Image (tube, rainbow, N blue to C red; front, top):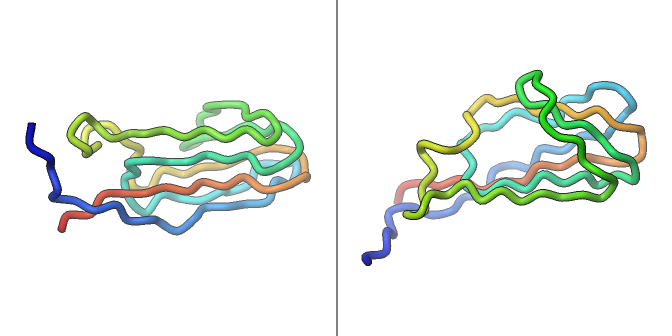
Length: 106
């Protein structure tokens, strides 16, 4: 099987916000992630919303890594969308961070 070397991994700017006890904007995606890390860096649980939809409750200190690449290393048909809005709601005890890589054609 041939290896597809037509794209490289590029880090996107980290999205991060302090949890305040009310809904806080974590950030907006600027590219389609191939790998995304969702990290509750606080000492309290928090709820993550994507485009206004409650998606997951993260326990204190919980992190989730999603590898969205298809078998050939591209996720053009299975990824979050550019412009997706991430918000969090948790006690004022720390930050929520989203780090991700995206593919860029060489």
